[in-house]
Each structure stands twice: as structure tokens, then as C-alpha cells.
Amino acid sequence: MTGSLALAAVDLGASSGRVMLGRVGPDELALTEVNRFRNGAVRLPDGLYWDVLGLYQDVLAGLRAAARQAADDGGGGLAGLAVDSWAVDYGLLGRHGALVANPRHYRDARTEAVIEKVHSQVDPARLYATNGLQFLPFNTLYQLAAEPDLQPGQRMLLVPDLLGYWLTGVQVAEETNASSTGLLDARTGDWAPQLVEALGLPAGLLPDVVPAGQVLADVAADVRAEIGIDRAPVVTTVGSHDTASAVVGVPAETSRFGYISCGTWGLVGVELEAPVLSEESRRANFTNERGVDGTIRYLRNVMGLWLLSESIRTWNLRGPEVDLQDALAAAAALPPGPRIDPNDPAFLPPGDMPSRIVRACEDAGASVPGTVPEIVRCILDSLAGAFADAIEQAEQLSGRPVEVVHIVGGGSQNALLCQLIADASGRPVVAGPVEATALGNVLVQARTHGVLGGELMELRERIRRTVPTTRYLPRGSRP
Image 1 (tube, rainbow, N blue to C red):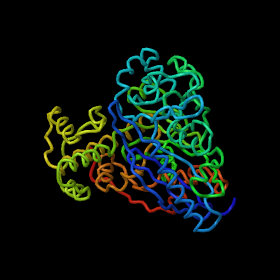
Image 2: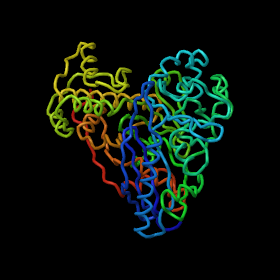
Image 3: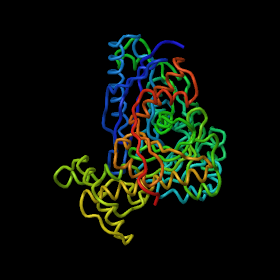
Image 4: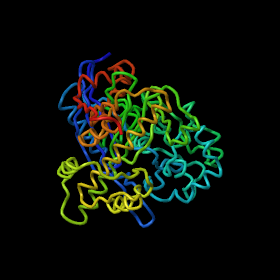
């Protein structure tokens, strides 16, 4: 093994992106944010899009800053980088590698019209038996079915793979994100040809699947000129699905843990060695996605802090700005309130979230939250209950005992939510690290570069030694 390296983690979420500079070595693990930028849906007359070109420019600016700081710190400059992002969305390339159009946003309603058609081509039970994927209306296979004119010779690249292609010229599909498309075989970790054929997808649409921990290529010369560096950093694959990298960053001590990667979405589940493809699992709407080192992320998607962020956005449009910390403090002083189903499809699109929450409470015959703190408390009680239910079901369906729940990502900073999860689950909750995804990204990079060795639990032990966490114990008995 060599000394420490400077490695950049490009970590893109649905509401913001960041470039983090990691310094990793046998006795060193440090992470610094060098660029943070907004991200989100762009509404046009024909639907919701991502501004992927603007996102790429922000990534280049972040890499420029990371390279400059790595050079200033000494030690040989920026040695490598890797990209992770949200799942399911993609860019289409034409025959000559040019982007056909800006990628659609997964909250766009275009897939609603094709779900029945897809299920007539491939029965949902057969889909699950092959791909092991939770039904979500925005899964990539439904988005592809909604494409108006797929052509032979076009190539689909998921968002992190698209950015990786622009950085290197290499087209691949990293397996952790590819597993979210609904087109990957849950057992083999490769594309399922029977699904591709049944859905009538054109030949050549899907690139080769590669695992996390593989060298792609050096950063291309034109990109190096854009960043302003002479030496070419090496681009490698990591868990390019941000949840896959976040699970690497869970500071678990044993395999008997549940995790909640909590941001815009809450990804709630356990880590397994093999998929669970039973009919019971399908009916419970659990998903089997690939993790780093051949693991399976057995989880359920829950509509996470999107409910809170979209409520805050709505309130701020209407009147005086709502301070989130003040609202959380006021909500903590309230008794438990009514609960909603966070996964109700009514909460998926952007819009007036508080009114939808009030309407859901009215429709359920529950008490109606009328103030900002009451709605915040309703959201957090509902999320905590949904997270706890998902942990309980993951344990039952997989047979993997859950002794402790780890919450990582932005939600780990929400003390009220963490305590409510502990109360609802009856299990200790360990909160942190906030930047679990970036940590998982740079640790897998470092292992690929030969700076570190070991399996996932050894990588996690490094995080436990380096990053502080907060422990919440359940109050009273489980409801």
C-alpha cells in the first residue's frame, strides 16, 4: 500500500450537488467540501427536466477547486475522482455520442400512461422474479417505455455514467445504479435479456455493466484543460447509486444492522448476501438493489424529507420565511399528532405540500394539523412510523436480525426525527455521518487505488474511528 491520496467525490443529490475532497491513507481519512451547488427540476411546458449541462459545469468547477486545493496541500495533487448520484434517470446519446435531449426528471408524470402497457408486456410477478425491484412509477423501464421514439444505435447512460462518459469518453453502466433500472437480473447482476426483448428495447441501448471498484480511464485531455491541470486524475467506479455509497459509509460494527439513508428520499433496509425474490417480498414492495462488493441492498423507498422541504418551500412562497430550526423546536414540544402515508402518490409531484397533508388527514378522519409546527410534527411522526415499519418488515422478510438502526445523510442531523425513529422502532438509532455517501465514495476509490485494503466492515471501522456519531435510545415501549 502507498501513502495518502487526494480523491474527489462528486456526490449529486436530487436537491443539491457537492464536490468533496478526500484525503485517504492507511492512517488518514479527511473530507472537505470544496463546492456545493443547487440541483432540482426544471419545469418546461412539456414536463420536468434536469439541467444536466448546468450540472456538468458545476461539477467541473468543483473539480477545478478540488485540484487546486489538492495541489496547495502537497502530496502529488488530485489523484482520482468518482461520481455518484440519484438513481433511475438517464441521458440518451445518439449514434455519434451526442446527448439527444436533457434528461427527464423522475417526478415527471409521463410514465403514468405507460405502466399498464408495460405490465401487459411483462407481468409484474415475472418482473419481480427477475429484477427483484420495488414497483415505483418512475423506474427506468417505465421511463424508457414513455420515450416517444427510441432508435437503434442510441445509448442510455444513467446520470453518473453520463458524467463519467463526458469526463473520460468511456460508456459503461455501473451495477449499483444499473440495478435500479428494472432491467438488471437480480441474481446475476447483468442485464436481463428476456426483459429487454419483451419490452422491445433497441439493440445496443444498454452499455456493459461494470462493478464498483474498477478503473475507467484517465480524465480526458480536453477536460483536464477545462479544469486547469496537467496531470490526469484517474476516474474509477464506486457505488454510483448514492445509496450504495451511503451504505458503505454506515459505521456498523456487525451485520445485524438496519440503515436509513435519509435525504429527499428515505431508503430503509438491511444489507444481504443474496436477493429476496419471494411473492411475499413483492407484495410488501421491497427492492433488491446491488451494493458494493456483490452485496444486496434489500430496502424500501419511503418518501423522505421531500415532504418537509417542499412544505418549507410552499410556506416561504406564501409569506414570511419559515425558519426550519424554529419549526423543529416547536414541533418537538407538541404531542404526537395525526399520521399520513408518506408514500401516497399525491405527495410525489412538486406543489402545495401542506394542503395535500391537510387533505390526507381530513380524508382519513384524523385530526387536522393547522399550524406550521403541527404539520412538521405530522410529517416527522409519519416518516418515523414508516421507517420503523420498513425496518420491521425487512427483518421479517429477509431473516436478518436488526439490533441497531443507522441513519445517515441529511436526516441524521434532525434530532427530533432520530428520536422518533428510536421510539417507533424500539431500537437504538445511531445518527451520522451526514456525508456517508461521500465517505463511501472516497473509501472505495482509495481501495481501488491500492491505498487501502479490506472488506466493507474494515472500511466501516475506519469511519467509526474518524467520524463522530450520536446515539438515540427508545423512550418507553414500542407502539
